[in-house]
Image 1 (cartoon, one colour):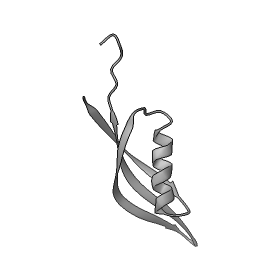
Image 2 (spheres, helix red, strand yellow):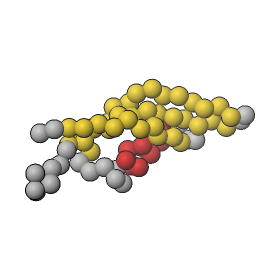
Image 3 (cartoon, rainbow, N blue to C red):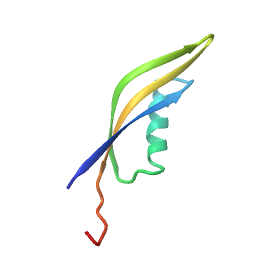
Image 4 (cartoon, rainbow, N blue to C red):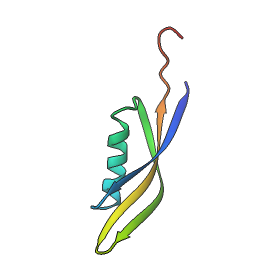
Length: 69
């Protein structure tokens, strides 16, 4: 069995939990067999009176081979 991972950044104006959830939900639209997620750096973008929470998320998934391999 082989696993692969990708690093992505989720964002949300609501908080870090939402930023993490957004990252995983968006990745699951194109990545199959997601097995785990690891939280990396968390940052907050400050723009005048608004905040944008950013969460780096490493997503791990099982590599699925085609039947011809």
